[in-house]
Structure formats: structure tokens, C-alpha cells
Length: 334
Image (cartoon, rainbow, N blue to C red; front, side, top):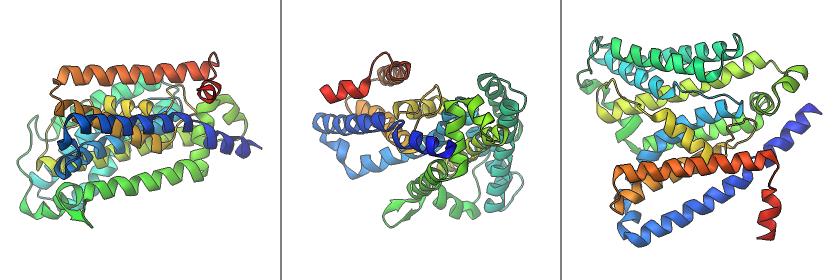
């Protein structure tokens, strides 16, 4: 009975907003294309995809956490830590790029495990726990190379750079393929596995999930590990893109991840959301940034517009979840 209820939650929650934002994305793209036809050029499309993929990946991790009713403020700093650790291992330590990548991801997972245990075991509020680890991760990023950006990674890392940024396969840049593979894997986890069902159950009703036999400590810890793992992958992409480790890499990525998630219909109140919606939300973020830039809008205006979109998305979610306005009935009438 418990699993049946959760499957019903999976099938309906968040789908309405996913459809809405998908339509909004198409309309926005057409408008920007009319304003400046170069918006649809091959070069700009490639540039847009490269901007969106890291936000999409890190947003998927944030979505898992948000669905449980938590938040992960550390992911931008974890991405920066990943960038600095991987680059330092390749430069100062002269380590093989692939071994450096593995060690980096293990370090990121370790920080995600700390986040998960702080939230699930000690019952520390997610905002406070991940705020602390956000500062810690940024401190690690600054310390690993003596508070300096690294030198350029060696030529032996060209394969690493090709995989995570510059290379292409079947006409698509490799980061896009990485994003697609991660999306398929984590969508399967969220929609088809016990871990996914427990993630929704915790966000829908924590006490009910606990009473029904869900191992809430394990399930809640997993989502923070997923989030840190995905942030670590983004950090490797940043290393490959810049060809070095930069201490401020990943700055504000946690905010962009939240924006992509909530725009795509992931509820900040927990229990609702689809990763496909997060992908669409990331594209809306990217299209707004890119399209307004093509229209000549300054950075301040772009940030203002995206901020307003995020607030509206959260307000719609709050109104729908409060039951004061039946959005399904409203759309049927419309």
C-alpha cells in the first residue's frame, strides 16, 4: 500500500509545472530568435548547451535534496573544491589525470556523506549544515594549493580535457553526453528504485515514511551524497574548461541549481519534482541569460529577470500546495 501511494505521487506531482515551463521555454526561444536570428545559430546553440549542462547536472543533485525537503548550499563550493583538488593533483603532485579524478570524486562524496549525516543523524537543519560545509569546501579549495590558483594542467591531461569539455562524439560535445547519461541514470534512480520512492516519501511526510519502515537516515544521507557526486563531476568540467584550478570556481552555482530546480517544478516544500523539469529549468535559466545578452540587456537586468522568475515559480508552488487555488481546475477552465 505504501509503495502504491508513492507511485501515485511519482506519476502526478510536478508534471503540471513541467509542461508549463516547457511551453514557456519554447515561447521564450522563439521570441529571442525573432529579436535576433543569430540566437538559433549553430555556434550560439553550442555555447548555450555548454552553459546549461553544468547547471543541469548540479541542479539534478539539488533536486534530490529539495524533494526530501532539504537544501544543499554547499554544492557550488564542492564544485570549486573538485576543480582545485583535481588540478593540484595533476600539477603539483604530477598525478595521472584519471587517478586524480577518482580521488577528487571520493573527496566530494566524503563531504556529501558529512552533509547527509549532519542532517539525517544529528537533525541539524539542512540550511545550517550545508552552509557550514559550503564554507569548509571553499576553504579546502583555497588551502590545497597554498591559497593560489594552480598552474596549467599538463599535456598528459589532454584526454581528460577532451572528455570533460573540448572533445566531441557523434557531433555532440562530450559534456553534453555526460549530462545525458547522468540524467538517464539519476532519473532511473528517482523514478524506478526504492531509493527514489523513499526520497519522495521523506519529502511528502517524514514521520509517515519513518513509521512505514523507510530507513530515513540512509535515504536522506544518499541524496546529499548524490548531490556532492554530481557537483564533483561539474568541478572536473570546470578544470577541463579552464585548464587549471581556480579557487573561485563554482561560485553561485548553488543558487543557479536552486533556480533550475524550482523553475522546473521541484517543490521547496519537499515531496514533488521531476528531473526532466530540472533540465527544462536549467534551459530556461540558460535561454534567459543567453537571449537577454543577445538582446543587449546588461548583466544586472538578466539577474533581475531570473530572480523574478524564481520567485514566481516558488509562489506558484506554494499556492498550489496550500490548496487555496486549484490550478488544475483553473487550467481546465482556461
